Image: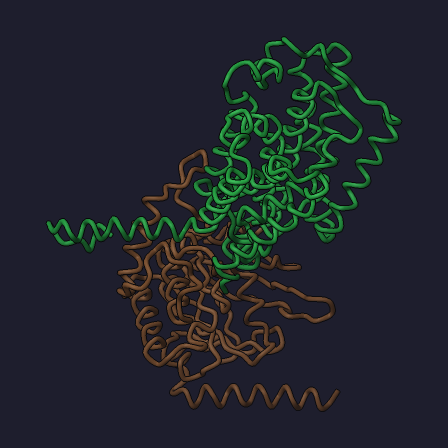
Length: 264
Length: 343
């Protein structure tokens, strides 16, 4: 149950090796090695400030790491950034949803990845139709808005729907969901779970970040626990009998942290 | 639309068309507001002085110099939409057109002069971008500083002397780009510079709405964090809008010198407030993410007609500034009905 060393890493979609990132003198990510295999759902958990969001933003290319390697399908990639991450088949549904509220739903779905010809002219009609189809796919049947409606007219759950639809559209190999159920109703949360199931059934991978241990336990195949910028535990679901056991581990980790803090 | 439509039913078809029209109006409401405002203002002027405002030559006289502002307002709408501002354009106009006038004055080919001016404009735009995007200075303060700095540079270089280039009259490039003002009085035509400015505006409208550059400008101005998360190179987009403004300012300067046959050390100076007002009067709000290039052109037209209208209405020139202010504030109040920032 302690940190397991996988010798064969060639089947990872993406792998981070000994990655660090600090902001000022805070080591948000302090030497993390971590990989995702095809078709698995990884639950990334940890307390506030454990480094989950920073790790995700390194993975998605928003923050360049201070040191360490990023390996995509066995090859190291240099000058990693958000566009490269998306090109590598990684789509991220950010906690803040990464939407431009004054722009249309269509424009948000294709933000940064417009359907365009080689002169950069956008195929407006195609984008509109694709957005329309996508909205139906994810169950947006409202007559109140259409692909030309600004995102600002949507509810929180609907905005999350747009963010997820966007990740889905580009047929990513790995979808990262950062706190996807925060501020969602029960029905909307169930929808997100259905979506995760759907993605896994198609052989894609997911990294699921959540505060709610029960949600993460239900959904993930493997758990990675972060604490103060380090991976403190990884475990397959088979090794953990129930959500309560996982919770117990989390509490142990937190107590250890307090004890260490007390010693200092 | 098409997907959900049931076969037949003329009524349904008609309703869809209506909703398309409503949608179009909703999407373009800012430009529509400023256009209506221009029309109402012109009707008001016409009522005040029917003689002047029913004659085409009144409009033509405005169209002689209006193009200079149009070359500026189009890229400036991109800048404001991207959440930035550029107050250095009057001096960029001055310095770029100084390059043009000097080359022509020295007997150089006007085409070389145009290329030189465009390069100067683009380079100064890039310099603004370095200050704002790379160094991270406030665009408002940095470009205001650049405006003084570049004007100061002009004054140091020329020490108050202007450059007259009457020799450009009659050259192919001059007659292609502008009309001789003496000639236009003779025939009822739209000055060539107006046609070029309209073409430039059309290009701007296209880039703004249909090209990935314009769309990214919208996204960056709306939410730069989201744009970055989605892989848009935010700094590159911001840099490009400043360079674009530099190029627009160079074009404005070239046309200004061609229209007047003279480059003054003050060339461009008077454009700051009217062009700036034109952006906002035209319907582009100051907060970024949305705007209208067509509206910006309408906005500069509104500002351009104020002076003509005030004088034609029989008021003295002392009223001009008063009406500038009044009309700008009124039109902004009308734009307010289009709603505040959506979040």
